[in-house]
Image (cartoon, rainbow, N blue to C red; front, side, top):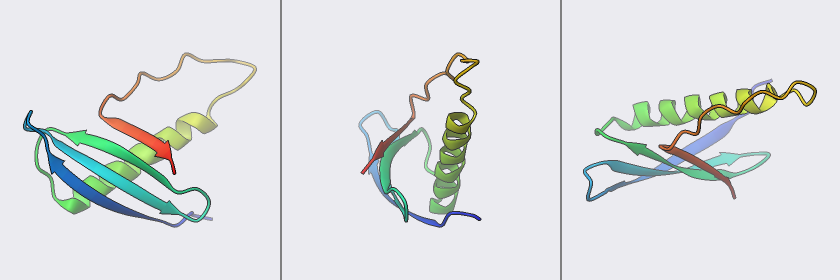
Length: 85
């Protein structure tokens, strides 16, 4: 069963020239929000696809944690931050 979620975004141009994207994930189980930093302008569809991909990678990494065989955590992604709302 696939979970349904809606992603909405707000963009802001930073003085560095980068684009900060604040996103909101409206999920039936747990709403979340976060920030994505991109260095070049992208269409909205590509931004949402990138957010979905990063969310899926983060969820897969969390599910792959085995308490009996701890593995070194994946390196932090300094351009993607996620918070629970």
